[in-house]
Length: 250
Image (tube, rainbow, N blue to C red; front, top):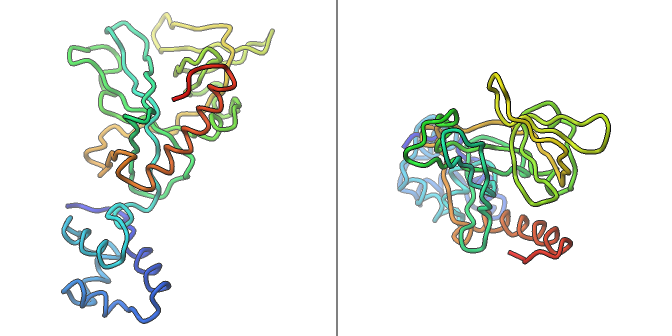
């Protein structure tokens, strides 16, 4: 399989720190390869197979995800979709104990990121069709801190209203009060929501349009310690908010 920016070097360094007698040579012997092969694997000079990854995970006492990815996974907190070709994007809550999943992406990124997955109906042919299957990545800190991030203003953002609705669009502060307007689309006659009272608003950082080509992986939180840690944190903050509002807990 094609790997990019694997985390093998870091895991080997950590393993050697915890086991001072171990060396690249001893790790190579356990793996049944030459030290040069281990060095080339950890420097991304040659690709690793899934069997290689499993072997290293067994030797180093870590998970395969620790080998494959440099950064922790991000919770998938919502599913974005549209009922008809003319509909706005709507979000369905995805972070429940039964369905919680996390997204692994290659590269280094901040730990406080969240994702929404786009899942359009099979017959959808509207303006957001190109996003079907994509992931929307956004900064989770404003959500955790209950604030409207200044970087969300007049930019594409995702937000939560005090009425517990998730929306995306271009956000504008209203000059005559403490409420906001949201431009939902980019047509000649845009749809605009007005007088929004917000819990938080966060800038959308990027879209992963082809996760299959970027080596992204979705894992169930219950099956991965890092993913469980991230979703447990999100549960905590979301249930604190829901308890404050007198809503049922997740």
